[in-house]
Amino acid sequence: MTRVRFVVEQHPEGYVAYPLGVEGAVVGEGDTAEETLADCRSALLFHVEAFGPEVLRSAGPILGAFVMDAEAA
Image (cartoon, rainbow, N blue to C red):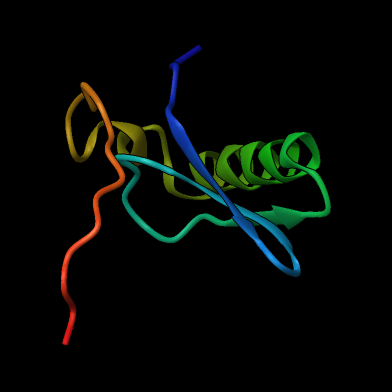
């Protein structure tokens, strides 16, 4: 089993999650962080079944992830 890092974002309407370093779009959503992570993990497993395990190796290993603020306009 390959370990994958997920980003889980909290929004006023609920949570959204996505895996880092995966080729293609995989997103999960839910009312709690745990529910959202489970939904995203399920979507990722389907994505790997559909497109093959190479979608997990496309970007190489993710060593870390950061949240940073910057001026956008």
